[in-house]
Length: 87
Image (cartoon, rainbow, N blue to C red):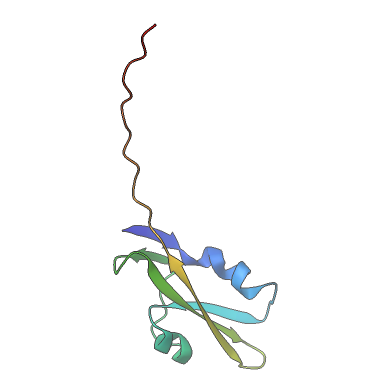
């Protein structure tokens, strides 16, 4: 498991739009309805990779758009001790 700061994706998702609210959800149904937003600091414990669903709501028009991306935790590399070199 690993902690992710989901808010680091806000600017990329908003794509320069200032009048939008971005929220993250564990299911597409939650993203569509706006229910159960995830905290900005999210610890993925469900699966690897884990799909996160994004809700973008325009605060002026009320229009909603959804998207998704995957959180991927790569395993920690295991160092290998090389055999000594001899000359």
